[in-house]
Length: 266
Image (tube, rainbow, N blue to C red; front, top):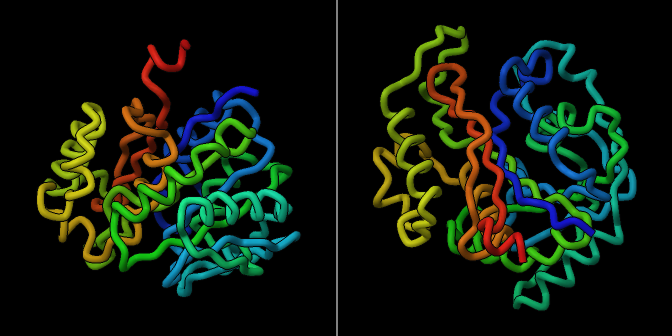
Protein backbone atom coordinates (compact mmCIF):
# COMPACT_ATOMS: atom_id res chain seq x y z
CA UNK A 1 0.00 0.00 0.00
CA UNK A 2 1.30 3.46 -0.93
CA UNK A 3 2.41 5.57 2.03
CA UNK A 4 0.29 8.70 2.27
CA UNK A 5 1.72 12.09 3.18
CA UNK A 6 0.53 14.05 6.19
CA UNK A 7 -1.23 17.31 5.38
CA UNK A 8 -1.95 20.62 7.10
CA UNK A 9 -4.65 22.98 5.83
CA UNK A 10 -5.75 26.39 7.00
CA UNK A 11 -9.54 26.16 6.95
CA UNK A 12 -10.29 29.87 7.29
CA UNK A 13 -13.77 31.26 7.83
CA UNK A 14 -16.88 29.05 7.58
CA UNK A 15 -17.83 31.30 4.65
CA UNK A 16 -15.42 29.29 2.49
CA UNK A 17 -18.14 26.63 2.44
CA UNK A 18 -20.21 29.02 0.31
CA UNK A 19 -17.35 29.90 -2.03
CA UNK A 20 -13.87 28.55 -1.42
CA UNK A 21 -12.14 30.51 -4.20
CA UNK A 22 -8.42 30.04 -4.64
CA UNK A 23 -8.15 28.18 -1.35
CA UNK A 24 -10.70 25.62 -2.48
CA UNK A 25 -8.88 25.21 -5.78
CA UNK A 26 -5.67 24.43 -3.88
CA UNK A 27 -7.49 21.89 -1.72
CA UNK A 28 -9.00 20.18 -4.75
CA UNK A 29 -5.67 20.10 -6.57
CA UNK A 30 -3.94 18.53 -3.58
CA UNK A 31 -6.67 15.93 -3.08
CA UNK A 32 -6.50 14.96 -6.75
CA UNK A 33 -2.74 14.41 -6.46
CA UNK A 34 -3.04 12.11 -3.43
CA UNK A 35 -3.75 8.38 -3.48
CA UNK A 36 -7.36 7.82 -2.46
CA UNK A 37 -7.35 7.08 1.29
CA UNK A 38 -9.54 4.49 2.97
CA UNK A 39 -10.18 6.96 5.81
CA UNK A 40 -9.18 10.43 6.99
CA UNK A 41 -8.16 11.26 10.56
CA UNK A 42 -8.59 14.99 11.15
CA UNK A 43 -7.04 16.93 14.03
CA UNK A 44 -9.23 20.05 14.09
CA UNK A 45 -8.69 23.31 15.92
CA UNK A 46 -12.39 23.22 16.82
CA UNK A 47 -12.35 20.13 19.00
CA UNK A 48 -10.49 20.92 22.20
CA UNK A 49 -10.15 18.66 25.22
CA UNK A 50 -8.03 18.28 28.31
CA UNK A 51 -6.77 14.83 27.24
CA UNK A 52 -6.51 13.00 23.88
CA UNK A 53 -9.84 11.89 22.44
CA UNK A 54 -10.96 10.29 19.20
CA UNK A 55 -14.36 10.31 17.50
CA UNK A 56 -16.02 6.90 17.35
CA UNK A 57 -19.39 7.72 15.75
CA UNK A 58 -20.52 5.44 12.93
CA UNK A 59 -22.47 8.27 11.30
CA UNK A 60 -21.05 11.56 12.61
CA UNK A 61 -23.34 14.54 12.49
CA UNK A 62 -22.42 17.82 10.80
CA UNK A 63 -21.71 20.35 13.55
CA UNK A 64 -22.43 24.04 12.84
CA UNK A 65 -20.14 25.39 15.53
CA UNK A 66 -20.50 29.10 14.72
CA UNK A 67 -23.03 31.90 14.78
CA UNK A 68 -23.85 35.10 12.96
CA UNK A 69 -23.24 33.71 9.48
CA UNK A 70 -25.67 33.45 6.53
CA UNK A 71 -28.48 30.95 6.94
CA UNK A 72 -27.41 28.77 3.96
CA UNK A 73 -24.31 27.74 5.93
CA UNK A 74 -26.51 26.06 8.51
CA UNK A 75 -28.22 23.95 5.87
CA UNK A 76 -24.96 22.35 4.74
CA UNK A 77 -24.47 18.71 5.64
CA UNK A 78 -21.36 16.60 5.10
CA UNK A 79 -22.69 13.04 5.51
CA UNK A 80 -19.39 11.14 5.46
CA UNK A 81 -19.47 7.93 7.48
CA UNK A 82 -17.34 7.40 10.54
CA UNK A 83 -14.79 4.62 10.90
CA UNK A 84 -15.00 3.03 14.37
CA UNK A 85 -12.30 0.47 13.48
CA UNK A 86 -9.90 3.24 12.51
CA UNK A 87 -10.84 5.13 15.68
CA UNK A 88 -9.94 2.02 17.71
CA UNK A 89 -6.63 1.82 15.84
CA UNK A 90 -5.94 5.50 16.65
CA UNK A 91 -6.73 4.87 20.32
CA UNK A 92 -4.49 1.81 20.36
CA UNK A 93 -1.53 3.62 18.82
CA UNK A 94 -1.89 6.51 21.26
CA UNK A 95 -2.11 4.10 24.19
CA UNK A 96 1.03 2.29 23.01
CA UNK A 97 2.82 5.65 22.99
CA UNK A 98 1.79 6.32 26.59
CA UNK A 99 -1.17 8.63 26.00
CA UNK A 100 -4.42 8.18 27.84
CA UNK A 101 -7.23 8.41 25.29
CA UNK A 102 -11.00 8.23 25.30
CA UNK A 103 -13.52 7.49 22.58
CA UNK A 104 -16.27 10.07 22.06
CA UNK A 105 -19.42 10.03 19.90
CA UNK A 106 -18.33 13.17 18.12
CA UNK A 107 -19.65 14.86 14.98
CA UNK A 108 -17.67 16.82 12.39
CA UNK A 109 -17.05 20.50 13.16
CA UNK A 110 -16.44 23.09 10.46
CA UNK A 111 -12.68 22.66 10.74
CA UNK A 112 -13.33 19.17 9.36
CA UNK A 113 -16.15 19.53 6.87
CA UNK A 114 -15.26 22.88 5.25
CA UNK A 115 -12.02 21.55 3.70
CA UNK A 116 -13.28 17.99 3.21
CA UNK A 117 -16.19 19.22 1.09
CA UNK A 118 -13.53 20.33 -1.39
CA UNK A 119 -11.19 17.36 -0.89
CA UNK A 120 -13.88 14.70 -1.17
CA UNK A 121 -17.19 16.28 -2.25
CA UNK A 122 -18.97 12.93 -2.48
CA UNK A 123 -18.51 12.48 1.29
CA UNK A 124 -17.73 8.82 0.57
CA UNK A 125 -14.51 8.49 2.57
CA UNK A 126 -14.87 7.72 6.30
CA UNK A 127 -13.76 10.46 8.69
CA UNK A 128 -12.42 10.19 12.24
CA UNK A 129 -11.99 13.41 14.25
CA UNK A 130 -9.13 13.82 16.71
CA UNK A 131 -9.14 16.30 19.61
CA UNK A 132 -6.42 18.81 20.48
CA UNK A 133 -5.20 19.75 23.96
CA UNK A 134 -4.58 23.51 23.74
CA UNK A 135 -2.86 23.82 27.11
CA UNK A 136 -0.20 21.22 26.24
CA UNK A 137 1.57 23.00 23.40
CA UNK A 138 3.41 22.10 20.19
CA UNK A 139 5.70 19.36 21.54
CA UNK A 140 2.75 17.37 22.87
CA UNK A 141 0.98 17.56 19.52
CA UNK A 142 4.13 16.65 17.62
CA UNK A 143 4.33 13.50 19.76
CA UNK A 144 0.65 12.76 19.06
CA UNK A 145 1.43 12.88 15.36
CA UNK A 146 4.48 10.66 15.80
CA UNK A 147 2.34 8.08 17.59
CA UNK A 148 -0.03 7.95 14.61
CA UNK A 149 2.57 7.79 11.85
CA UNK A 150 1.91 4.09 11.17
CA UNK A 151 -1.55 4.97 9.86
CA UNK A 152 0.06 6.49 6.78
CA UNK A 153 1.11 2.98 5.71
CA UNK A 154 -2.44 1.72 6.29
CA UNK A 155 -4.22 3.91 3.76
CA UNK A 156 -5.19 6.63 6.25
CA UNK A 157 -4.72 10.32 5.49
CA UNK A 158 -3.65 12.34 8.54
CA UNK A 159 -4.97 15.88 8.18
CA UNK A 160 -4.33 18.80 10.52
CA UNK A 161 -6.92 21.56 10.09
CA UNK A 162 -6.27 24.96 11.64
CA UNK A 163 -4.80 28.22 10.36
CA UNK A 164 -1.24 29.42 9.92
CA UNK A 165 -2.30 32.73 11.46
CA UNK A 166 -5.48 33.29 13.44
CA UNK A 167 -6.14 36.65 15.08
CA UNK A 168 -9.90 37.17 14.86
CA UNK A 169 -9.60 40.55 16.58
CA UNK A 170 -7.98 41.93 13.42
CA UNK A 171 -10.09 40.23 10.74
CA UNK A 172 -11.45 42.51 7.99
CA UNK A 173 -14.54 40.74 6.73
CA UNK A 174 -14.55 42.69 3.49
CA UNK A 175 -11.92 41.33 1.13
CA UNK A 176 -9.41 44.09 0.30
CA UNK A 177 -6.68 41.92 -1.20
CA UNK A 178 -4.24 43.37 1.32
CA UNK A 179 -2.03 41.35 3.66
CA UNK A 180 -1.04 42.59 7.09
CA UNK A 181 2.79 42.85 7.18
CA UNK A 182 3.10 40.76 10.35
CA UNK A 183 1.14 37.95 8.70
CA UNK A 184 3.50 37.82 5.72
CA UNK A 185 6.48 37.89 8.09
CA UNK A 186 5.10 35.01 10.15
CA UNK A 187 4.32 32.99 7.02
CA UNK A 188 7.85 33.49 5.70
CA UNK A 189 9.44 32.48 8.99
CA UNK A 190 7.42 29.28 9.18
CA UNK A 191 8.10 28.35 5.58
CA UNK A 192 11.84 28.84 6.05
CA UNK A 193 11.98 26.84 9.29
CA UNK A 194 9.86 24.03 7.81
CA UNK A 195 11.97 23.92 4.68
CA UNK A 196 15.19 23.32 6.62
CA UNK A 197 13.53 21.08 9.22
CA UNK A 198 14.44 23.27 12.19
CA UNK A 199 12.31 21.46 14.76
CA UNK A 200 13.95 23.18 17.72
CA UNK A 201 12.84 26.58 16.43
CA UNK A 202 9.43 25.37 15.26
CA UNK A 203 8.54 23.81 18.60
CA UNK A 204 9.69 27.02 20.29
CA UNK A 205 7.92 29.27 17.75
CA UNK A 206 6.15 31.17 20.53
CA UNK A 207 9.48 32.77 21.49
CA UNK A 208 11.32 32.68 18.16
CA UNK A 209 8.82 33.47 15.41
CA UNK A 210 8.16 37.14 14.63
CA UNK A 211 5.04 38.48 16.37
CA UNK A 212 3.92 34.99 17.29
CA UNK A 213 1.50 36.14 19.99
CA UNK A 214 -0.14 38.54 17.55
CA UNK A 215 -0.41 35.85 14.87
CA UNK A 216 -1.87 33.44 17.45
CA UNK A 217 -3.35 35.06 20.57
CA UNK A 218 -4.26 31.47 21.44
CA UNK A 219 -2.49 28.41 20.03
CA UNK A 220 -5.24 26.01 19.02
CA UNK A 221 -5.24 26.89 15.30
CA UNK A 222 -1.52 26.21 14.86
CA UNK A 223 -1.39 22.97 16.85
CA UNK A 224 -2.83 20.82 14.00
CA UNK A 225 0.30 21.64 11.98
CA UNK A 226 2.44 19.95 14.63
CA UNK A 227 0.25 16.84 14.56
CA UNK A 228 0.76 16.57 10.79
CA UNK A 229 4.47 17.30 11.09
CA UNK A 230 4.93 14.64 13.76
CA UNK A 231 3.07 12.08 11.67
CA UNK A 232 5.41 12.78 8.75
CA UNK A 233 8.42 11.71 10.79
CA UNK A 234 11.86 13.07 11.56
CA UNK A 235 13.46 14.88 8.64
CA UNK A 236 10.13 15.28 6.80
CA UNK A 237 10.15 17.33 3.63
CA UNK A 238 7.67 20.23 3.72
CA UNK A 239 6.01 21.32 0.49
CA UNK A 240 3.97 24.51 0.65
CA UNK A 241 1.01 23.96 -1.67
CA UNK A 242 -0.74 27.29 -1.10
CA UNK A 243 0.05 30.54 0.67
CA UNK A 244 -2.86 32.92 0.18
CA UNK A 245 -4.32 35.25 2.81
CA UNK A 246 -8.00 36.05 3.39
CA UNK A 247 -9.51 38.94 5.37
CA UNK A 248 -6.02 40.54 5.56
CA UNK A 249 -4.89 38.43 8.53
CA UNK A 250 -5.90 34.78 8.00
CA UNK A 251 -2.97 32.99 6.37
CA UNK A 252 -4.41 30.08 4.38
CA UNK A 253 -1.21 28.06 3.99
CA UNK A 254 -1.45 24.42 2.94
CA UNK A 255 1.46 22.06 3.57
CA UNK A 256 2.15 18.51 2.48
CA UNK A 257 4.71 16.61 4.53
CA UNK A 258 6.58 13.62 3.09
CA UNK A 259 9.83 11.76 3.64
CA UNK A 260 12.96 13.20 2.04
CA UNK A 261 13.45 11.97 -1.53
CA UNK A 262 16.31 9.65 -0.59
CA UNK A 263 14.24 7.98 2.14
CA UNK A 264 11.07 7.72 0.04
CA UNK A 265 13.01 5.96 -2.70
CA UNK A 266 14.25 3.16 -0.43
